[in-house]
Image 1: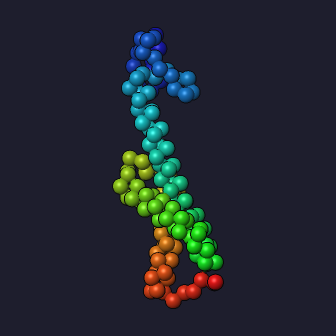
Image 2: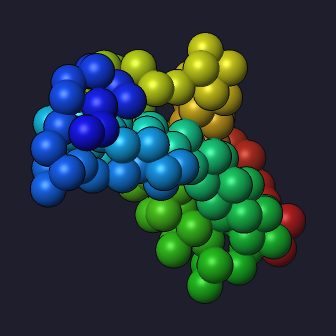
Image 3: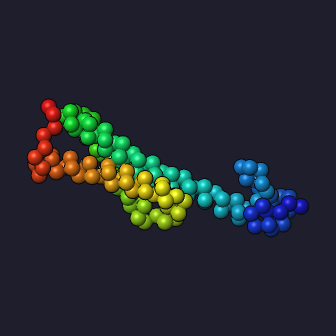
Length: 136
Ligand SMILES: [Zn+2]
């Protein structure tokens, strides 16, 4: 007779499941763990999206600076899409962000805001609102 390592329920042999570190768990706790793992993955994706936003933003800005549109547009699109995803996930997905440390949250927000700020600046320059000339 095994007991669930998570909720201490007694388990019939047929009902025993095992965690990745070989602890016996019941079906309910196993499902819970799986949900948690998915949420942690989602939290990591949110952080990655924030970092991607900034990195793509910087790549796009470099391309913008040397007037190399071929790289600028895809990088800008990736940056803005990731930044918006990270930003809205940070603001609305408590379920996922609960798995992030405050350092993770700060990094994600700073990167997303930085990347989006770069995109906003480029948009203003392209729209002629700011008189800033990239090197030709
Ligand atoms: Zn259990």
